[in-house]
Length: 275
Image 1: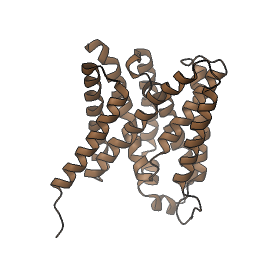
Image 2: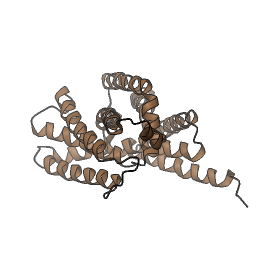
Image 3: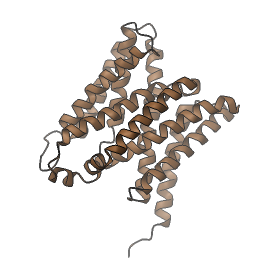
Image 4: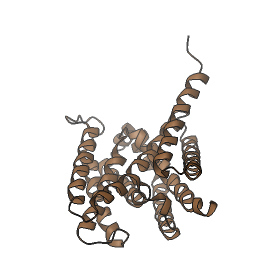
């Protein structure tokens, strides 16, 4: 059993390492559903690739997914307001519109493919149990490069996410930096959606970060709490799925939900009430 559990567990560890960190930016920027929208854009690209006759696991399929994700990154970078700007349409509304349109388009395209129903199911739940070591290795290399990219530019990205007024006062070209942030974000999602599916991608990004923000605002402690939460939910979900023969991806999502509930209770019980 350990041999069967090891690849999905390692895949989750690799995904958690990058997703939980990016989730901190998502929470700080208050663009909670941007990951769902970008994930759906990547899924739409992959589905279009299938319709064009591209094999789902080929480099061309990845190219299709990345092309559509780049379009989404450009849209989100251009439509985000900052500083003294006032948006008639909230940024979250734009994100929601992109998600809905990409989802509807994905269904229409999948309907024209020989395995349309299976394609939609793969997008939602992924194929975590069947992930292979070459896929994990390729994903780890890409995430390492993106991690280095974010580390080198951490001052810019962290300031824009956590102190947007300061970034605006510095006169930075925020939309340009947003584009690079969302593009790297989309690249991460492009590699994770085929493995985990859209639902689990959202959980990996948002829930560990949300739990971390419940207990601290310290930039050094936030990623530690987020990483630990993601690893625990992944490991426990995989173990329970093998023990009780339950779908792995949905069970990990449920574990994330339970952990968030426990975190709220712990925060409520152990936080002193102000008189």
